[in-house]
Image (tube, rainbow, N blue to C red; front, side, top):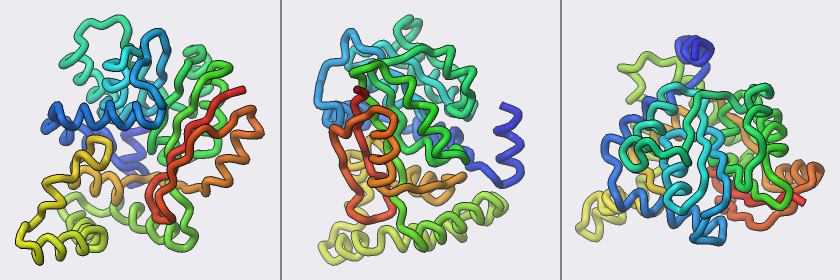
Length: 275
């Protein structure tokens, strides 16, 4: 916890957990169901009974909750103590005192901690490992956590070359800017990302319709929290799908499903199975 606080104070790390806490304040059943459906679609099943699920970097805890609702034995951990608090809060709300859902503080870069966990049928880390400050080490660390025949489901920011480097600079600037002035970075980012749907909605006489219907399209996230996470999310690293395929093939994994972000700067989703 001390390292995380020092990194935040130095402008070297975004406070993911505080953003998630604001998100949880408005979490509803529709968003939870959206998360469940997203997980079901990528894993190709509606039932995880009898299967163990590791959420490496649980964030809000929403997808740990989704996996538990699908019947999995869930272990959640996160480096950010506020994210751990969010995950524990979701457990308290929906699965209080449940022995089949464990929530801990831990780092995916801490080999000793990871070695204590054992292995799992499903290892899930969506949009997390590229925020560790040592992405390739983190990717290497999660591979042994998957049981033989088990599944690894990750999402990693797409490498867009020069454009990705520019975004990294924006993210770094955001975290080093005083809180009261960060809107000066968020506002132009909002316009850049959403001016097209805003114009369309105004022309169709339904202002901000896209914003009101955003949650069901983005794994349960709200538009504003997604934007803050996207602009502020630092450390920040990227990879191409090809780089990730080569990396995990060399470690005994075969690709089962790939959903790309269509050449944009979003996340590519990959589901691997361990040989």
